[in-house]
Image 1 (cartoon, rainbow, N blue to C red):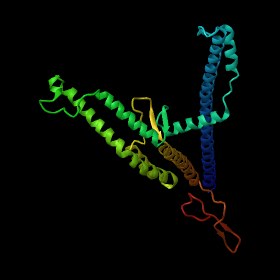
Image 2 (cartoon, one colour):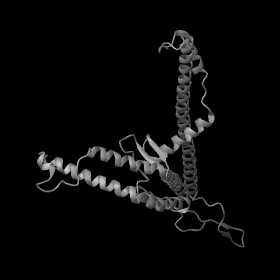
Image 3 (tube, helix red, strand yellow):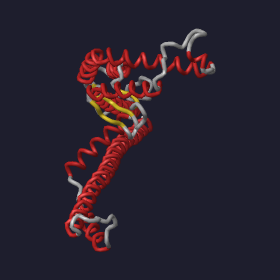
Image 4 (cartoon, rainbow, N blue to C red):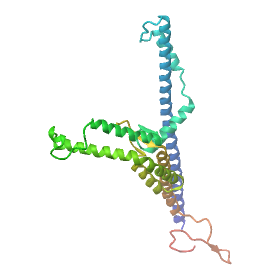
Length: 295
C-alpha cells in the first residue's frame, strides 16, 4: 500500500508540474508573438513617418531654391548640408504609440486570418469595387472581340483561322464575363443576408455555424483574390467572424491539451479522506491499485 501511495503521489506531482509548465509555455509564446507584432508595427509606422518627413523636407528645399533662383531651375540633388539636416530630422522621428498599437492590432488580425500578408479589409462598397474591377479586366481581355459569335462555320473565328484551343479560350472568357455580369447584379442583395449570418454566427454561434457562414460568404465574394493581383480582400464581417473562429479554435486546443494533462494527473489519485471507522476507533482506507481491498 505504501508503494502504491508513494507512486501515485509522485505521478500526481509530475503531472501537476507538466500542467503548470504547459500553461507557462503558452503565456510565454503569446508574449513572444505580441512582441514580434509590436516590433514589426513600430518599424512599419516609423518607415511611413520617415517617408513623410523626407517628402516634406524635399518639398521645403525645392521651394527655397525656387525662391532663391527667382523661379529658375530647382535642382534635384541634395547638398551635403541638406542631407545632414535631413538625417537629423529622421533621427528625431518617433513613431506615435497610437499608430503603433493600431498597426500591431492589424498585424495580429492578418496573422490570425491566415489570408496572407497582403490582405485588404474592405466594406460592402469595397466588394462592389472588386466586382467592377473584375468585370473591367475581363472586358479588356476580350479587347472588343465579338464573343457572341463563336459557333458555326460562318463565325469570324474560322475566317481568321483560330485554333481549337484559342476558340476554347474565347468561350471560357465569354462564360467568365457572363458570370461576372450576373454576380454584379445579384451579389449585392445576397451579401446582405450573408453579412447578417456572419454577425449572428460570430455573436453566439458554434464553430460549425461560423464555418458555414464563412463558406456562404465566400460564395458571394465577400472574400477572395484582388482582381489583377495584389493579394486578397476580406469584408469586415468575414474578418470579425474568422477572428472569432480562430480564437475559439485556439481556446479549444489549449483546453484539450490541458484536459489531457489533467486526466493524466487524476489517474494518480491519492486518497486524503478515510473511508470510515469502527467502534474500536480503527480507520479504514481504500487506495487505487488496491484491487478493491479496504485497509
